Image 1: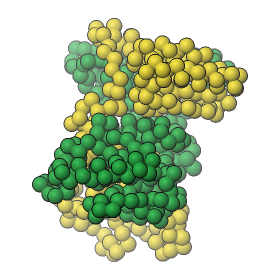
Image 2: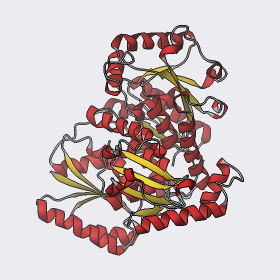
Image 3: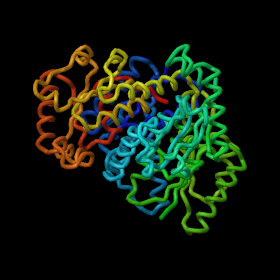
Image 4: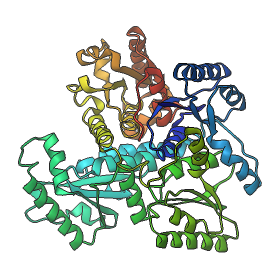
Length: 270
Length: 270
């Protein structure tokens, strides 16, 4: 199996995300090694040796994907016997001529704290998502960017947290539980924030599986119960003209991207 | 201001993360527009028009960063009058010859649910982080990959959530509170999982600021209280030889990358 090294003088998260996207186009397994914070020539030398040892050990030339900003560190790492792909500079040089501006490379700009205010807002968004998870509190809905609603275990919590961590959005979520089902209507705090509501739904069989893992053979997990709750809540979404999304075959990243697309909410990039 | 379009037939998260990393090397502001899920030729045509309208309106040629897998969609989008950068194919062609394998492009591989088991594990990691946040429960520590410890508001919760969402790791966290400070020692559930412990600490002034936002002028937020708690907890870390990290000037991404580096925990890539 080919070994892939992701190397950076920062967190290496950009190198990982992007390298993973490129490699996922190939029907091959890879052994993946991430080496972040290569900030000195000494560390760079160790990385070079580690890559060369890998080549000696496996007999297959490793791939090296890097986002190294410091030129000295880069030069040393690139002495390794690997097929190197420079994610940043490949695009930086053509952009310099297009923009008519020289790049000013700085380490830690991407996932660092260059902008303290934006960062603090994002952490506050995470705190908001936790404080307003699962209907715990409805008092701060005035400050919410979005309020996710749906039955228990349809994907509201991971979606709220991802919206907060990745995009800095204040996402609350509110569950409809069994006791609500008799005369299902929007509770007052939701009515007052109707323009922020976004519904999530899920396939009843999938919901049954998820709930069964949590409380096996309970009434809560029974397929019939899941079907009833979902059909009532979806009827409410339609009656109230609330935009909603079926989460069954979507990852949390896909759900969030679809919500942003549907609502036009502005994401904050870090 | 130059407008940048991130366009994809998937979530566009890869295009955003990578484009943001490339652009952050330039000392310029950009107007950033993300357009995900461009899956049909009709949608591609709309995107092309939107980009051309932007050019007509601003008089500045937009930048287009794309990760479009479908060739028909790509062809149509690329008719737009923009400076286009193809994040995937720039690296895919050289890799094909290096690997001796043709790429098999498929939409939604990167942030989709190609691997259901891995995805479910990651969502379970998020549920685990929530159920084991802030010392709520210590019963599942056997199943934890890592247990973060430290004083209240030093960064444990966002770090746990990011480890779960981004890397699929089961991260619990446990706070040392004022009542613990008299005779500070490791509680039994932490002692039993000593090899999983990782300490977080923070600058006292920064902690004072953060706590003051939460409970202004409280004893909890007083600078002296913050100093005392931190010095006692740091002494405990040293006595017990627990690896720890100062979070003051690090983003949650940097903290997580440093923890993975220090512990050697294996990350799961999605």
